[in-house]
Length: 162
Ligand SMILES: NC(=O)c1ccc[n+]([C@@H]2O[C@H](COP(=O)([O-])OP(=O)(O)OC[C@H]3O[C@@H](n4cnc5c(N)ncnc54)[C@H](OP(=O)(O)O)[C@@H]3O)[C@@H](O)[C@H]2O)c1
Image 1: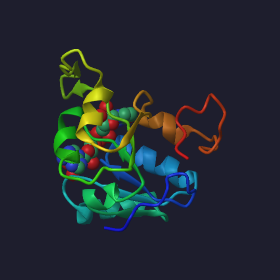
Image 2: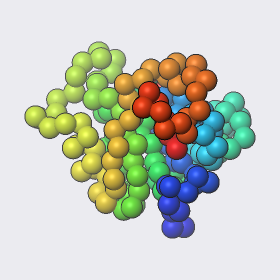
Image 3: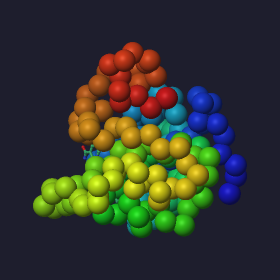
Image 4: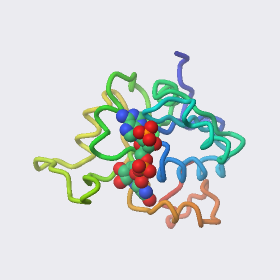
């Protein structure tokens, strides 16, 4: 696996683990910010062919390892799937944007956290990474309808990925 470039590099590719509603909304935002994106899911890159075609230029499909090979990696999988999705990957040095919510589907009940924060739990699962909780409180449509520049440093732009 190649060494990731710095996430501060505006040309750096962003990996997204989870390519459903949230993952695709994050991908569109990243592309609007001029980033390349590698999308991954549990079923492999071939299953993502229609998704990457729909998302267009700048977006490719890869394995979870390919996505985690990027310097910045967004997590967009259901809470219950986080451990399996991140297990066994090389997280050292990555910036992880955790867009998950600690909810159990389909009941939409709060997941038991044993008095911890969800970020403490996820941080422990991605050793060596720096974790940022972001994007989780915004519905996918908030990303999709936004016309703002995702690179803006305006305080109102809490959804930016730059
Ligand atoms: N929907 C929203 O508007 C929204 C907004 C902000 C945050 N979120 C949060 O984002 C997360 C995902 O929600 P969603 O609505 O995007 O769900 P979703 O549409 O069901 O998509 C889930 C994605 O996770 C992938 N996945 C599941 N297990 C995996 C594994 N072990 N390894 C790799 N990929 C795996 C799935 O791939 P396969 O299909 O191949 O299994 C699928 O691409 C949740 O934590 C949710 O709370 C959602």
